[in-house]
Length: 461
Image (cartoon, rainbow, N blue to C red; front, side, top):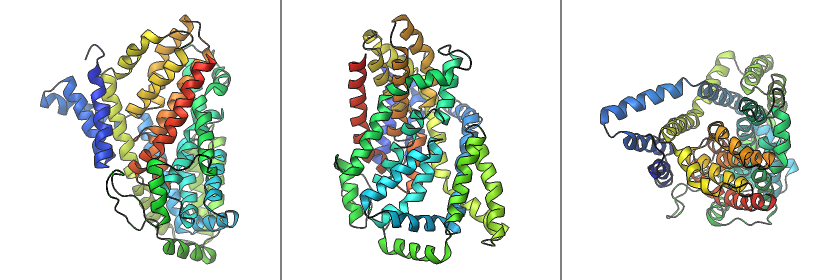
């Protein structure tokens, strides 16, 4: 395809419809990618060759390799925390500080704010740490996943000491928006204008406090959780249930944690992970490696498990992350096809007539939010569009920090709201929640923050 066209919108629509209908995100993404390849060239041999080439390219991508290692190793660490009883001990200790559903969700919120280094680390740690506590008070896993997701990317965006700040600050330098060594400084100047991130955090706080009530799909999920059940099928159909919220089993787990689990066996590895990640210049992979190197001898010294048992648990933990890893890999393949269909260029060109200094921030936010939501790519879309958007902002004499804030607001919206973005996948994985149920239940709240952000950009500009 040499010219952008409305045909590029077909694959994202296919993915969204199939993801909701089939509740199989990986299959939906693969079918969406194939539909895009059919649009590019309907020849069967060409489709197979293109899909093979794109798949190989994605698997050779440094980001994908990093993600597989980080997610798999984090799964291994979580498996050790659970097996030693440390996770249950943390849950039991957290129960002493919580008196009901609101306080349990507020504790999850506070943990999300504290673990600001990386959205992956945030989503997996908070979800895994708090799901036993919220289960105890019959809070739905969907509500927990929403709280986790709302304090993952949005919080990381707002804190300059995070992987997001390091990545985007580097992009600002690479594209001439900031001078060498000034990327973080320019990034910091845009933080007050990252309206979606601020509003997303505010909305989730109001939901936790009950000021904004549960409504729509979230209300149904909460009602099911109060009955000790969870949503398994399309939220518009009759609801089937399972024993995901079997309160009796959870109570038994906490009773066992009292006698078997030790709180330090949970806190020490988590604190080491945060400390090592900061020490290695916000490198989560190095932080995980260092943490595992210390945690294994730490557990061995206590004779909690033999080395072979620990390795078995780590392999099981790594395998538990394969669905999340597979979804993100499929999303990268899908994003590559969307790029070949010139989807970013089509969205930008469609809105170019509205590009004025006053309207630019709002138009940038809306267009980039649509792109990030459609492709599941928050960092990738920013990298593709910043060379297009920023020269336009300079030519219109627009407010540069405000435009950067709009771009980053769109990235954080896409990261949170997209059904198959890495942050959404990991928030659901960490919280033990069905991915599509999480995406559907949190979307109305994300849209509230997005609409308010758009109005804010119009007012400020």
